[in-house]
Length: 300
Ligand SMILES: NC(=O)C1=CN([C@@H]2O[C@H](COP(=O)(O)OP(=O)(O)OC[C@H]3O[C@@H](n4cnc5c(N)ncnc54)[C@H](OP(=O)(O)O)[C@@H]3O)[C@@H](O)[C@H]2O)C=CC1
Ligand SMILES: Nc1nc(=O)c2c([nH]1)NC[C@@H]1CN(c3ccc(C(=O)N[C@@H](CCC(=O)O)C(=O)O)cc3)C=[N+]21
Image (tube, rainbow, N blue to C red; front, side, top):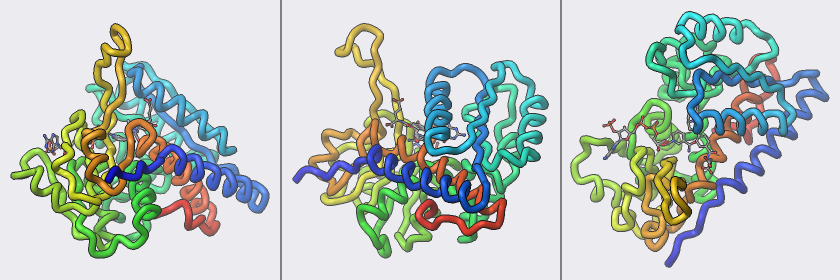
C-alpha cells in the first residue's frame, strides 16, 4: 500500500481563503483591519524568502503588513525599542521577529519583550505556559498547522499513540502539548532517546521535527501510520546542475510512503500551513484585542 499524500499546500490555500473571509467580515462589521508586523534582522537568504512570502500572503487576505528590515549589526537595545513601539501601535495586532537572530542579540529576551497578546508566533513564555496548562493561548504556527492537518485526516485523535521527534520550544514541545490536549498518548523523543527507530514504530501519529535530512527511515514507520514531516532541509542537488539545491524533510519520503497510511511531502506539506496559521493567529489576536468573537475554524 502506498500512503495518501497530505496536501498541505491545498489545505493552506483553503485556510487562507477562510482568513480572507473573516478579514472582510471584521472590516464590514467592526471597521477593523488586522495588521501583522514582521521584523527581519540581517540578510539570511532563506529568511528573506519566508518574510517576502509572509508579507505577500498577508496583503492577499486583506490584512495590513508592516515589514521592518534591520541591519545584521543592529544592537539589541534598538531591536527591543522597535518591539516596544510595535507593542504600543494600535494598528499592529500581531508581531513576528524572524529567527534565528544574530549572535549579539539575546533571543529569549526579545521574544519575551513582545506583548503576549500580539505574540502570533506563540513563543512568549506566557503563551507557552497557557498552552501547557490548557488555557486560551496563542499557539505556535507550525504545530497548529500540523494539528489541523491531523484533525482533517483522522478526526478524533483520542487514545492514539503519538511520537514527536524533536523537543524544541518552537515545534516539538508545543506539538506534544496539542497532541496531549487531544487525548493522544504522547512520547517526545530527542537526541538522547534510546532505540529511536523502535520508539517511532509505536506511533500511530509520527511527527518529525529534527532538522536532519531524511533521518526517519521507512522501517521506523508503523504500517498505516500518519507521518507529519516538519523538516525543511536544503541539500545539494548536483543532478539539477552545478551548485543547485533541493528541499527535503526529516523523513525519507520515498521509503516512508510505502509503509505509512498518510504522509506530508516537503515542500508542499507543513511549510505552507505555517504561514497560513500565522495569518489565522493574527485574525485571532485582532478579535481578542477588540473583544470580538474569534472564528473557531482558525484555532486548534
Ligand atoms: N515547516 C515549517 O514551517 C518549519 C520547519 N522547521 C524545520 O523543522 C526542523 C526542526 O526545527 P527546530 O525544532 O527549530 O529544530 P531544533 O534544532 O531547535 O531542534 C531539533 C530537535 O531535534 C532533536 N534531534 C537532533 N538530532 C537528533 C537525532 N539524531 N536523533 C533524535 N533527535 C534529534 C534535538 O534533540 P536535543 O534536544 O536532544 O538536542 C532537538 O530537540 C528543522 O528542519 C527546521 O528547518 C522549523 C520551523 C518551521
Ligand atoms: N519567528 C519565526 N517564526 C517562524 O515561523 C519561523 C521563523 N521565525 N524562522 C524560520 C522558520 C521556518 N519557517 C518556515 C515557514 C514556511 C515555510 C514554507 O512555506 N516552505 C515551503 C517551501 C519554501 C521554499 O521553497 O523554500 C514548503 O515547505 O512548501 C518553511 C519554513 C518559519 N519559521
